[in-house]
Image 1 (tube, rainbow, N blue to C red):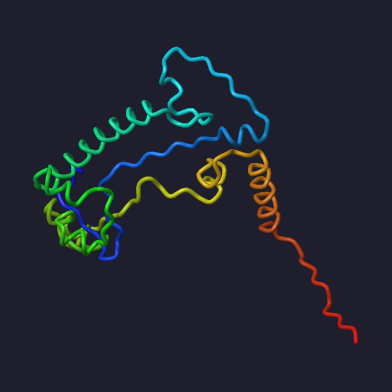
Image 2: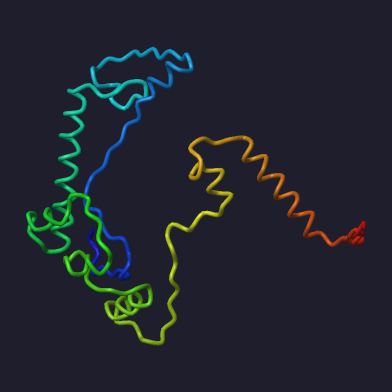
Length: 191
């Protein structure tokens, strides 16, 4: 939020200034599979994020209060960074989604432009020579498919089967890269 300038592509999805929270209640599923959950807690809300219960009215109110505070902090920081009053920014918030063009019109971004324009803006801000070579580096480095599979990014549960699959594919790929004669079966047709 402390960027000096914000650039966006015209069709970029811009937003959402809002706060979202979700909680799974798997109690029905646990009953269905015959699983019992036994809890030991020292505070009434120690299990507020438990998957084995729904929220009590008191817990729901507590979470709504907490989320309201997070939301107000978020809107305040966004308003400050854009030089807008809280009320003006709050009217643009509520989790709304804007295209890049709409965000520019709403004052949420400074300019329409992509990486080339951002590099040009950076050159100006840092007073760099127009011909000086620069390297654009993406952070964090995009994960490979295998890193995503094994880290659980694509699947919520790590599986030893995925590691076995990765090892098998790597072994097969290595064998294909080893120089060896290839034999193809002749094309035989029966009539």
